[in-house]
Length: 415
Ligand code: ADP
Image (tube, rainbow, N blue to C red; front, side, top):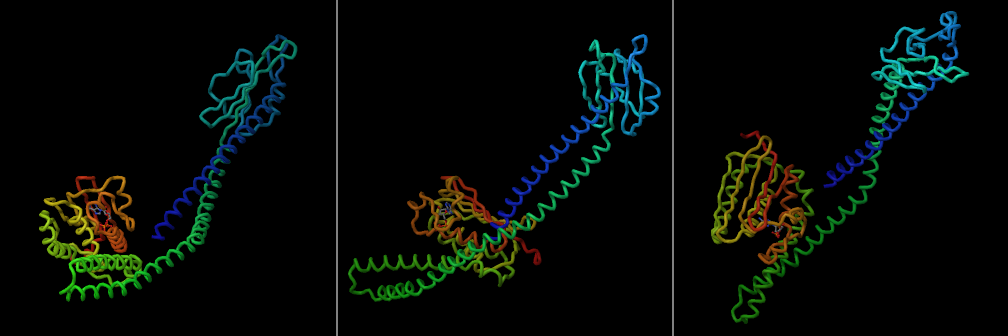
């Protein structure tokens, strides 16, 4: 049980940690990439502004760039500069690559991005006196370097997040262990208390039961009312003995199972069990149908598995009204043996299905229908199936019937 809780706690905490780390890394990346682009644009604007002042008007009022300036101008291989006249006609260039896109002829600065590989800034150049546009300067920069920086950032962040998740997971395991230790200890104490109390109650109950039995054996001369009272005491004591035995069994389930696992022929176990209960089913005119595959084997404790299946069969008989039908089906499914107990009984309300494996839980309808149960049978059955590495599930409809499905790991060494 605690293994499952620890596993779930670990998964939930690890998911939360991973989500926090991934979203923080994503936000950091977004901000960083945005700043990188912003910086590059600012650099391009500054360069364009520097280049714009080199455009002058010649005698005929045409814009020109001095060839001496062009030849002295130093440029990196991932940049290119272009100058255009007011009509968008190229008048000078410097660089190795030039974007093949139309020039935006606007009176204000323009930013463009081509296929996420080139960033372009186009700056209109205005005449100082008339404030009219006399030309444009276009500065382009390849984004290779920036992309490489982003790629390194991604690698760094990815590795950082993975390392943080790995270290965080170790921390989570340790913290969970610290948190679970006192809970586990108090649960063990409670379990021990239940086991001790049940054990201590058993002896006086046995004594009452045997004394009443003796009194009933020699009941001649006993008044009718006293005889009935004695019978009621026997019934109540038997019920209490069963209850203490069930509680003791539940308290000890974990310890009982780690040893004595033998090969069990489930087909035989179920067939024998059905034979045992045929008379009881007949007394209620219940039709018992069996569909059990031969040679279904599993490893486990035969006494406990018999107990688990007995609980399911007894419930099916107990909660199915006269003339009903009970089907027991067992078949192999890949690695599992599937055993179904299907009845046409009173059924269970869908809102109650989640409770039926809880200790002492009984449906309200059942209390009116049959008051002999304790509500521990299914808890015991579930504990037995779980300790055999299997699972139990239920499908039911109120007023129509129930189907309890047990899956146990199949042993194939004999088939
Ligand atoms: P008990 O039968 O002693 O009450 P169980 O733990 O075996 O205790 O069952 C718990 C409850 O689940 C029952 O009280 C009943 O409400 C419901 N239940 C179990 N089996 C069936 C069934 N075959 N049909 C209808 N209800 C069932």
